[in-house]
Image 1 (tube, rainbow, N blue to C red):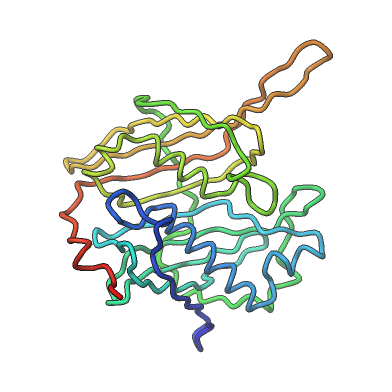
Image 2: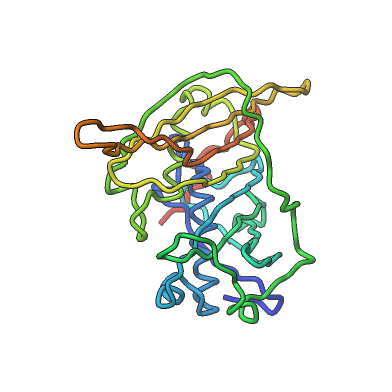
Length: 280
């Protein structure tokens, strides 16, 4: 529902698809709830993907930033996702979000950057026709929208490859945004994921990839300039698709599909899931 102060609120329950091996909500699930809730909000404003498709437009998300609390949501927890638009420029819409458990404890907050793309030209197009239909709440901007720059100088820890299959695709026919985050999270060792909790996640989507492409994720450990026990990682995901250069030679065209920066801190002891899970 849309509140009187132009926020949109929706409730979800953490399902098995949203959790990790310790029953905790995954970073990919946080992105999922942000995207789903944002789309529901736009549907209320008659600006959902199916509303803008007839005029040859699609929505794209180019950037996502999230900050996580140590107290996360576990399987079967009910959560409340609140969405509001905080800034609108000619080509970019910044949408803030906050996720809370049913007990009022905040789990995560952040924002994403949306744009409209012309389907034929694949160029960004202005929001001009819809300015009056997009409510903006500038006083509720939680973080600076200045584009974050990532340190690319680091130590290569691991490299993994993923062949794009049909389950990775979205309704636009290209790789789903959450797939890149899932691949990045899978590039870390399970022992590390069990011992450390994510504190910050920042994603830049740069190029599309499609069915049959090979995605290569390079996990780099970045320097830590503080005395804190904190790990900074950069996951660079490149897309390698085979193209025919001439009748006899096939070349590999490589481009950066996404860059994903994350910060990790020692994990606090997790609550007993048997005491938190809902019962019949």
